[in-house]
Each structure stands twice: as C-alpha cells, then as structure tokens.
Image (tube, rainbow, N blue to C red):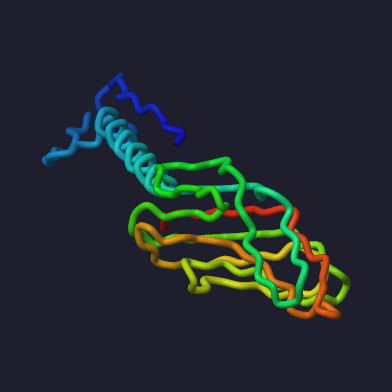
Length: 194
C-alpha cells in the first residue's frame, strides 16, 4: 500500500475576509470531538488500514499447496482404465496444512473449505474421449471431458476434513480395440483454503 505522509500546516496569517474593499479578521469556528482531523490522526488511520490489508493478505494464503508438475509420465493402456496422476514435490506449500504423500496424492491436515484447480496436458489418439477427474477420497469434486490431445482443466469448491485425500485421475473411455496410448505429461494443481 502506498501511503501519503500527512504533515500539519503552519499558520501564516489569521483568517480574513474583504467586504467593500475593507479587510476584516475572522474568528474561526470552534469544534469539539474526540478525533480531530490532524496529520497525526490521518497517518494513524493509514497505518491501521495497511495493517488490516496485510492481515487479510496473510489470511488468503495461509494454507495452500501448488504443484507444477507430475511425478512421472502417466500412461493408460486399456479402455476405461482410470489412472492416478501423481503430483511432484510442491513448488509452494504454505501453512503446512496439506501433505504430499509418496503416491502423489495430497492429504488434508485440518478441517476447512478449499478451492481446487487441476490442469493436465494429455496426449491421446485423435478422436479418443478422455476425462480428467478430481476426487476427495472416493467422491468426485469436478471433472472435464474432451476429445483429442489438449490441456484439460477442472475446478471445484469443497469442504474437507483432516485426513481426506485429494487425487487427480484420468481415463480414456473410447479407445478403439480397448487399447490406447493416452498419456498425461504435465500437471498443474492448486489447492487453497477459502
């Protein structure tokens, strides 16, 4: 926040008014109150606003985990096979309220409501029907279905409890002859408390 430093002015003359070319001194109005407008009070108000903004900023990002890649390339070899997309080590882990497990899933460490976003680059045979899923334990949070090689995205808001597991999976359910060379090559996962 950019603050403006307020400084009290210095009086250089009394208040005056000119009537019919005659100058008269004016007695200023009298005020009472507990918080007069002064440089000190204006600067104090700015400090309080800045403190409140900083507290809100900290609250917004006190619990987050972001992974910008997958642990390893994931391949689907059979039609309707649902495969876990394991997350790599997080690039951001704020607040220690999420834990990346060795299988590439994310464990929630306290009760909260979260926003979750997943994006995966998937390569498939032309015309294959692919689905990206986000799960909390075994319950679906969000999904995206599409055709062909592209970036798939899904997002959702969900209440979670300590111990819940968040995972990302992909499935190809239209591969010809039951075989597919579907692969996930890149992942972007973000989970924030809201």
